[in-house]
Length: 123
Image 1 (cartoon, helix red, strand yellow):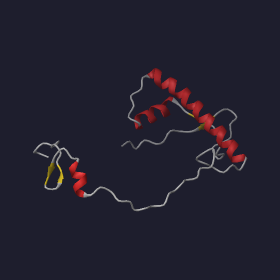
Image 2 (cartoon, helix red, strand yellow):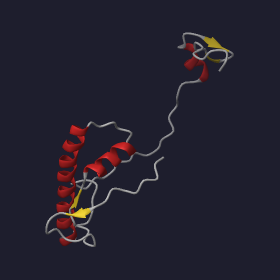
Image 3 (cartoon, helix red, strand yellow):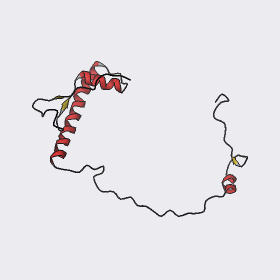
Image 4 (spheres, helix red, strand yellow):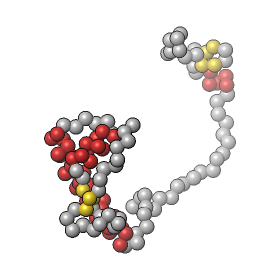
């Protein structure tokens, strides 16, 4: 595992400084190369250039949403609408007997289902 430092985050233009959680970070080619290395991805020079722009747009969007959510005291949610689980009572119901279950088996050995061996002898 690499002990390289995490990607640097720098403010964009007149964006707020790093103390502001809504600060929009920007990525460098080195940051994207570092992330690709951590993800064990081999990227070409052209792909690095492409992903720098794409990932920066994503980070800008996340920063914008974070800024709006922070200003509005919006409670974090996992779903847009409330969900309610519907539970049913646990009721003991009769199942198959041992004999009935084995009666439908293609092969039985020692009162158990017999299945083909899938591992070699060395296993």
